[in-house]
Length: 182
Image (cartoon, rainbow, N blue to C red):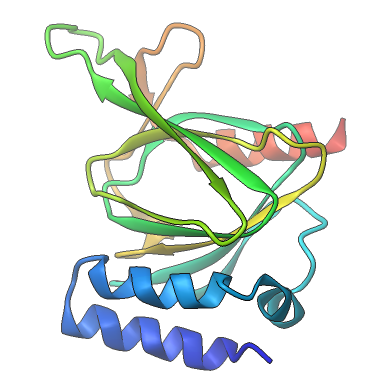
């Protein structure tokens, strides 16, 4: 059986020893290496949402479940993250700022598909959008190097014109709820 309390304690110890994502990546890789055990501990990913497993000023662990076919527009976190897939798939498009653009526009700079068992770190400056391209919910453990629920100065980008604006957690929540209700 996957020990969720030990996972949290291991993450806390790793962040205290090194404030980067380096120690966390190995811990998340171990957690998603046996997805069936992890699912027994946190539940089958059947309902979209983000459920906090642990949150403090220097570490947040979230179980993220993406609805089928959902896409979340470009956004940043301003803290590092490590994403580990335990069910389904998550496609990330990575974006970069267009330096000469006064409206804060971005352009695509790369992409990465994450399947069950895959883990990827995201640096503090990463801008990404997320897509679940399959017809079922996808689940991932997201570990953040800070208090994810109280990050200041975050941005999101309008999905049509890619112009920067202030991040709104309410926009994301409404988007996810509206998508899962349809």
